[in-house]
Image 1 (spheres, rainbow, N blue to C red):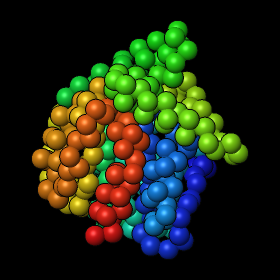
Image 2: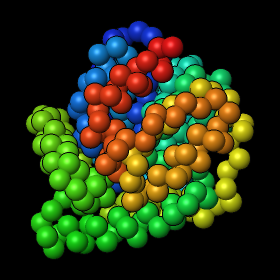
Image 3: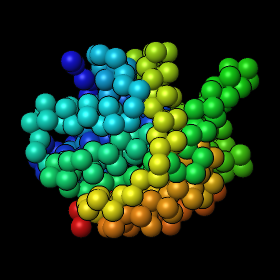
Image 4: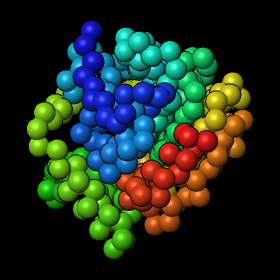
Length: 262
């Protein structure tokens, strides 16, 4: 099985593995976040099984995706990594951190929540509604899903979409409909699981989100910080939603690097 990935930054130090959101590919990471982190860290973004240019078929459970992520990390020969999971990538990161305590040193979780978290089982329906509405209004669904419907939120959303187009060569493939269906099923299952304990996650974890996340409601971020034994909470970004770390990329990158280096 072949995984597509990109590596940026220095060639030494503990690698930082990035785990993307639902329906995302390599090109859905904000260049300001990836390049900002890569200024000091070896950063690796990759497509999980069946996503974008990666081979195989996409698992329909978060646990299956987590096992693939571990397979990818071990295939690169790493025996210790840091993880940064956004949204669905944060679900995956939680499973990897719990199941592979020696492999994972530190974790950054953004716009995400625990298994069984409030409102997470509604994410697939929200995503589908926004995609249909986006097609009808010719507007990228990420604007309504990731950003607040305020002047500041709309401005931040438009700037983010422009940045996503900056890379013009060697772009990744869009997610296929079968892979998206598998991911939607996995997210719904995660939202309907019995709430996760998380006391077994002993690594230091940095938790971030906006104060108005309509995809993975912001209370999940507070819940994560309360349940994780070694957590640090970034104060919720004001007037921000699911894409808060993109809207406030300068502050977030500085905090993430400080946490990873400490």
